[in-house]
Length: 341
Image (cartoon, rainbow, N blue to C red; front, side, top):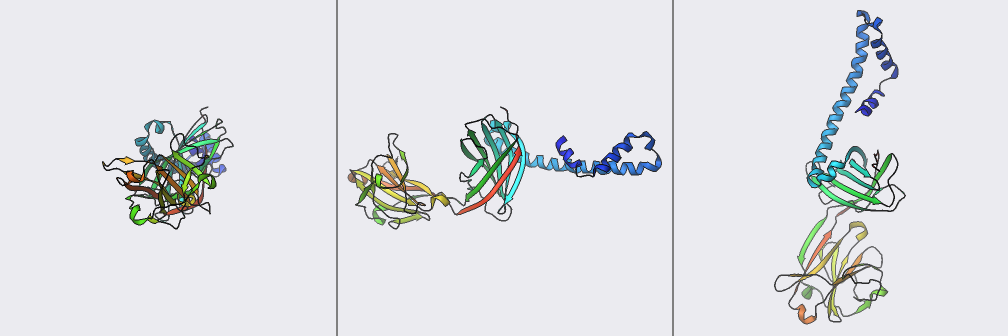
């Protein structure tokens, strides 16, 4: 409060403040002739302070609304946060650092995003791992979606960052450089036996630009694995941005391969699974992912411990997440911090 009032007073010419204070302190000045001049100056100062207090009340109300949203999701974290309310605007989108908690080598940052010019921010908006606190230490982080306000088109997030060294200094810089929005979740049955011919050829994973794997804990992605030989042009598209490009059997195991377009821009991803005659889901034993020739799209080769004879008893389904819009910008806010180290 004192800091805000002090800041407001700096907008009044020093000579008027000094004159007003001097006049108030000078008992000789309290005369009918001088009273009007003195009190006009005092009233002017008081008016500025009242405007500041009114502004502070509005800010507190806005932060209280944001605080309530976070409190409903994570009450323990909400109690630790100190209000910040610092904003910046780029590409017509406002980012506000609502509150922050710094404790040793960890930072919890509560932010909001609001589209000032359209409807680009929605409940699916994602920071796409493009956020950062600007320190020299290595760190790991996570981002949790807190809420979306349909009326104000405002999305809020809680970002947690932990680094190898204590967070030091009096100010912190937090930035975001990329947003994805307009996400679509698609769950559907895949009639691969009707829409896709069985793939006969295969290659070794050691000949492909493998970028990761999932499933079996003993999976060694650097070891050779047989992979269906396919191209992005094969197969069919259950949803824009995704293609089912092949299925086949290698060493009596079922392989189903999908291709996700432009994952670096839109984070298209998903998986396929089987459903048996009892309605039970059967997930892959392991999956390997590798880049396309351009290094922008990704193939996923999902492997099931299912023989050709057993496969006749199963149906194939897919769950896919695709994105419609990528928004780039430079949202950056610096603010004072209180490190509890």
